[in-house]
Image (cartoon, rainbow, N blue to C red; front, side, top):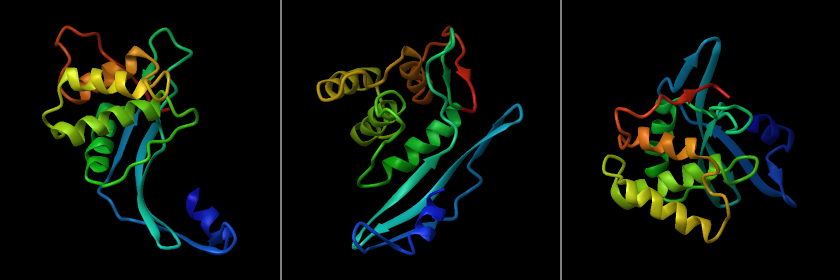
Length: 167
């Protein structure tokens, strides 16, 4: 993981810029489905004089390859959004930078705009449209928007259940 990379770099990267990673103790942020467990790790990363907090979630499944695309556990996503919304700067990252990362970017922006407990459907949709002006396919699959509907208590009781998995 990131701590091992920092240790191998002997505390320096990019032409000798000091680099460090420090684990930040957190509550028991873990969720289990079947035999698989998901966790959120919180770290302080410092590059020279610039530092930031990293929230690393180890189990967000990719949205494609199934008739009903998988999404992570709702409570894990709620925790990520709540924690990220407390930060001044946030980078949302995944392998492609659109689906999972875009879903989190839309959610965090909405939480900053309206507060975690007051996000509206219109704000989520407006954020998706606005973010797609800069990066196509932000929130790649409807299941990702449905996930945010559940996270922010906007879904109808008659909505089909989410396909929650540890990815």
